[in-house]
Amino acid sequence: MSTGRPVGRDAVAVLTGDLVGSTGLLVRDLERARSVVIEAVAEMARWPDGGILAGAEFFRGDSWQVLLGEPRHFLRAALYVRASLRREGRDLDTRIGVGIGAVEKIDLNRVSLSIGEAFTASGRALDGMSGDLGVTVSIPDHASEALGWIRPMAALCSAATNHWSERQAEIVSRMLTLPGPRQMDVAAMLAVSRQQVSKSLAAVDFDAVLAAISYVEHIDWSKALQPRRQRRLI
Image 1 (cartoon, rainbow, N blue to C red):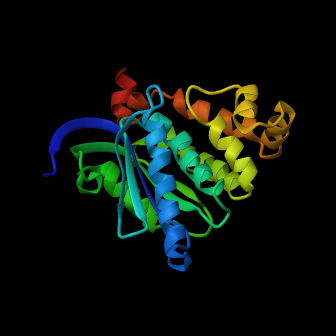
Image 2 (image 1 turned 90 degrees about the horizontal axis):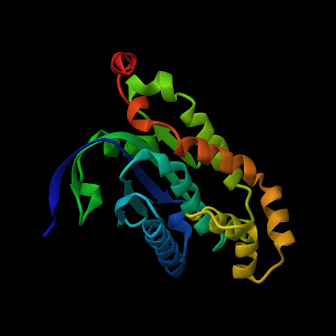
């Protein structure tokens, strides 16, 4: 039996994705892609303060959804899921619509049955995505002045993902985990030299991507998402 409960959260992030080119994938490849997303989310749930409240749930065969308890990890999470897929094969990828805002009720067993503006915004962001954007973000209208830069920043970081090779994606995915590992740790995991890890990260401008992620993670989201009048009173 599904359990829904009121939560009254004013700031969450919902990631809604669909697998790219799923209708052209063999059944075994579709199943592999689904397993990768589920395993990536399970890994994020183990991160300290990773914030995974519910997910990943697949619906309509190739669509999935995840709920983060707060917005600050949305960019790291979205890029981690894409990198996890791309390290398995360049034919595997997902588009992701991120909705940031409030949630009224969470269904812990079926996150897609939850209710709130963040869920609605996430689905609409994905449905309205065009081209090879990869990741798009929807924020409340009243927060557009404070957070209008979020969309282009996410788009630029996601665009970098489009060009990662399988090896680069594997290295980046490991560097995105929390707490952030050292390059020598990743090199030891993959049985390669530190120089190889460093060279791959430089080739994909990982320092710039990580700087964007760090900026997003250090925003005062509760303040940024308040209506302008309330922000002035603080």
